[in-house]
Image 1 (tube, one colour):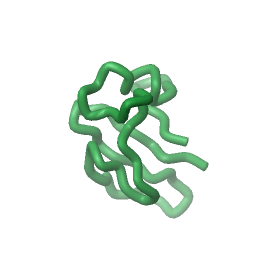
Image 2 (cartoon, helix red, strand yellow):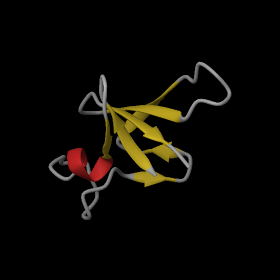
Image 3 (cartoon, helix red, strand yellow):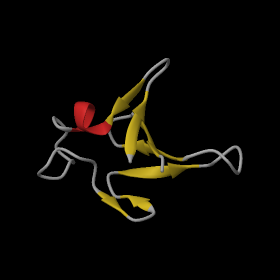
Image 4 (cartoon, helix red, strand yellow):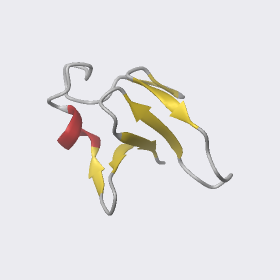
Length: 65
C-alpha cells in the first residue's frame, strides 16, 4: 500500500494523488513493483523502515506492506 507522509499525519495516496497530472487514471501514484515512476527513492535510515520516495509534487510517499 502506498501512503503519503505529512508532518504528523499519514494520508491514503488516493486522497492526495487524484488531482496530480502524473497519477494513473484511477488517481493512484504510478507504481511498478519496487519503483515509484512519478518520483525518486529516498534512502532508508534503517532496515525496518518502509521504502520512501519523493514524488514530483514534493510529497513523501511510503510503500508499506
